[in-house]
Amino acid sequence: MDYEPGTPIVITESEGVGLTTPEPFVRHVTALLSPLLQPGIGDFAIGTCEVPPGQMGSLHTHPDAAEIWMFSEGQGRATVGDREIVTGPGMVVFTPPGVSHQFFNTG
Figure 1 (tube, rainbow, N blue to C red):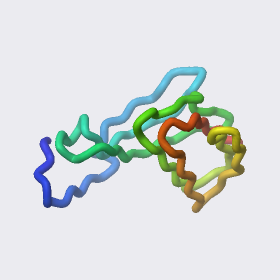
Figure 2 (cartoon, rainbow, N blue to C red):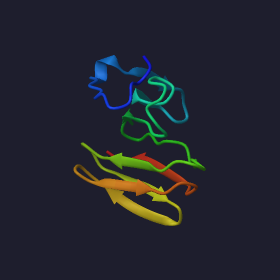
Figure 3 (cartoon, one colour):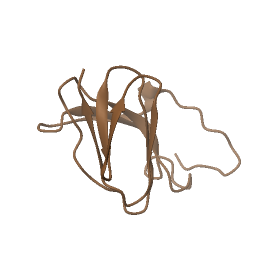
C-alpha cells in the first residue's frame, strides 16, 4: 500500500512480513514499516527480530541508515563498532550509519 503523506499508519505485528533466516544466523525478522512495504513513507524501517538463545545476527553495516535495537526480554551482548555492550530488557542501543554491529543472545 502506498503511503499518503499526513496520514497515520497503524499496523500490528501479525500484518508484518516475516522470515526466518537459516544457520549460522538463526532469527525471525518481521518487517512492519518500510519503503518497500509502504512506498513514500520515507527512509526508515521498523520491525521486530527474535533471536533464539545461543544465536546471533551477522556482523554488518548499513552505509546510509542508523539501526536502533530495543530489547524486550532475555540477556545478550552487542558489538557496535569497537564497543561491547551487555544488553537486557528495557535497554535501547543506537547504531549510527556506517558503523558495524552484531547482536548475540546469551540467554
